[in-house]
Length: 360
Ligand SMILES: NC(=O)c1ccc[n+]([C@@H]2O[C@H](COP(=O)([O-])OP(=O)(O)OC[C@H]3O[C@@H](n4cnc5c(N)ncnc54)[C@H](O)[C@@H]3O)[C@@H](O)[C@H]2O)c1
Ligand SMILES: [Zn+2]
Ligand SMILES: [Zn+2]
Image 1 (cartoon, helix red, strand yellow):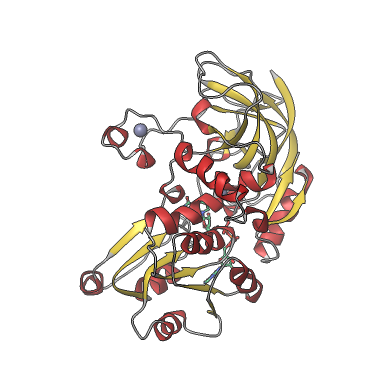
Image 2: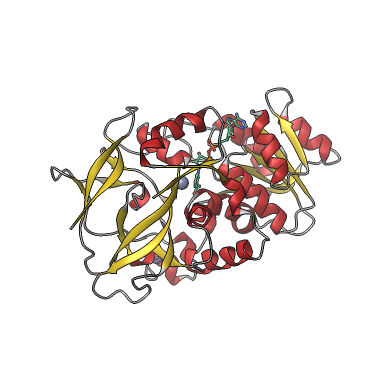
């Protein structure tokens, strides 16, 4: 048993607090990870606001890298001392999707079986089954993916959620090809990663759309060829006028709002693809004329975690990072400590950061 400090959301909308968290020693199939870095993702804030579910208290944090400290019985994938990125979709290999050869859709992903608790024994719900705004965390062995230890933990950890979701939304779900035109709606950590992914995949034109001018400056640094401030300009018209009146081959919604999803729907070229990577809350609805859905053809695709397969994609992307072809460092706006998470939420809401990263 380990007593560590961790960031807890106790009740809906209330500021998070740093609490003593009790982390059990790893049991069968589990590993104990010494967290080195964990990024602040919008999904952590969704948890705190009760937009994911009501299973308070939550142990937040899920974009992390660290070192395996101890492993439980039966763990062969990783060993103490390994540098790992944590993932929230440890695939089972046995469900109907895995058996069909589509493990990235696994319908039965694994988390640690034992619960981490508060000092008084209250069980914690770990955000996305990770809970890494803590000095140590307990996860299923498959949630820890070994990568090249030369990567900086602050940068590597970001692949554990938002950056992977964005890269994958473009490269895997959206299947961006050389020469494609891509429009990205919402240029936070996820959207800018989608821009970087579109560039890596060879997109000829990448149009970045946001309501915050600062985000558009960063979007250019990640490789956007054109930027649109959708407070001032109708983004559908703007995308069309930048594409000879046609629209983009792939439109990526990285905000999680119905009006943005509609913009992304209408900004597509015929037979284009809409990728939904922003997370909606359960109250949201989109209404589309069926004839528009049919008549425009193409595909509307939700993207869970960028359709990534951590064991395949994390090591490969870390190699690209180490070769200087994927600038993960650029996502790190600031490093903070555990006490800085509540503040980091406000900076995120004000649009001042791409990623605040807790360094332990
Ligand atoms: N699908 C997944 O697996 C997955 C993984 C991680 C995060 N997410 C989700 O992706 C979304 C983005 O996450 P993030 O960390 O980049 O958040 P963020 O807050 O850093 O970025 C959101 C961006 O959207 C912009 N925005 C807000 N309203 C807009 C509008 N109407 N039009 C255009 N832009 C607008 C903001 O200015 C900001 O730049 C969140 O909903 C998050 O929960 C999904
Ligand atoms: Zn499975
Ligand atoms: Zn996340």
